Image (cartoon, rainbow, N blue to C red; front, side, top):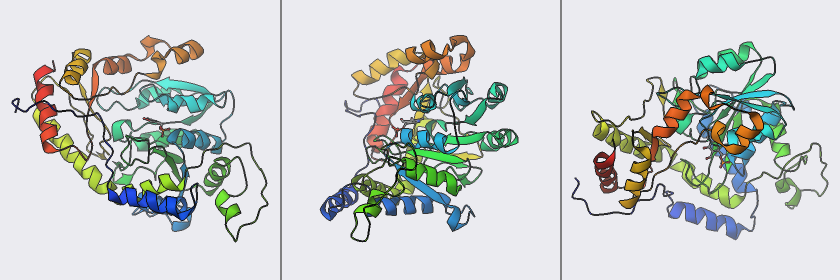
Amino acid sequence: MTSLGKKEIPFHRPYITSEEIDGVVDAVKSGWLTMGPKTVEFERKFGDYVFAGSGIEQDRRFAVSFNSATAALHLALKAVGLKAGDEVILPTNTFVATAEVVTYFGAIPVLCDIEEDTHNMDISMMERLITKKTRAVMPVHFGGQPCDMDEIMSLAKDRRIAVIEDAAHALPSRYKGKLIGTIGDITCFSFYATKTLATGEGGMATTVNEGYARTMKINRLHGISKDAWDRYTIKGDWFYEVVDNGNKYNTTDMNSALGLAQLRKVDWMNSRRAEIAKQYDQAFQNTSIITPLVKGDRKTSWHLYVIKTKNRNELVEQLKEEGIGTSVHFIPVHQHPYYKRTYGYQEKDYPISNSVFDRSLSLPIYPGLSNDEVEYIISRTLKYAE
Ligand SMILES: Cc1ncc(COP(=O)(O)O)c(C=O)c1O
């Protein structure tokens, strides 16, 4: 295997075919560039996908599109009524967006440590962090593996705490057979360029609560009582009212055209990622490399394949020398200067996140990776990892 010649393998390549390109060309040619018919169709089909087999009635299935998951998370918190001074519990091992949206309200991000094996929020610590001010929890399904949603939902329900799932990594992921998107009060997905469904930038919130869906829809477009789509068509009418203090968070029909094409292959893309993960698992077993653990009652989207090694920093450089792009997920929120300074987080409160962060490395995993490339990554990782 080690005889494979040097290759250039980026950390990520989007899986874009003529289907996506034709869809975008179609959207541009249609003359409707912003949010319009393709976005309406994408919301409907995304909702059909996520809620299929859930047993949830058709008229309680809502999918609201955004220009990012950050925007979706922001308005999800608005929908559940977050106010200044409220507390929101979230894992420190996340992308900063999860914490940042809480600060938009003058509310407080309360950081929770993680489990060593799944890198998901430690639910026993989450329980200890709950106070009278806790208004919401934001579980992050790290790398695509769902958190223990039964435990989180029961803790939250007893105390009337809203559950906003950060599912930026979790399409398609399953918890006890249920697709992520059908469990919490609101679930937010990301369609950022590297995600398992990529539109460049984009996001979607799913919920079964009509009031939450309405609040998010109105606020994603300046708090206006109807979409531009309703105003500018021949049948539309010019009159609108601003009924809330909203944001400009809508997506475009070009992005939605990409989303529609990607959605058609989301299951295939997931199975190809799972194949690659299996190849990595097999190659690294019985070595010093710690591979991801997926619990028996969960299915992961395999957005990330995170290994842990003793020589993470050297390994990043050695793999780079060999032409292999890698990444690190995540620098914990409590280590970022702004958050440390503003909220006074203490390193000592997050021992597992600190230790996981020091050892973690994300290897390339995406549908367009060839078997040769996977073999090359395996051979070089085995050569250098300690
Ligand atoms: C866990 C997590 N939450 C939220 C986001 C934000 O997603 P977006 O870039 O679509 O706003 C990301 C993006 O990488 C993420 O990894």
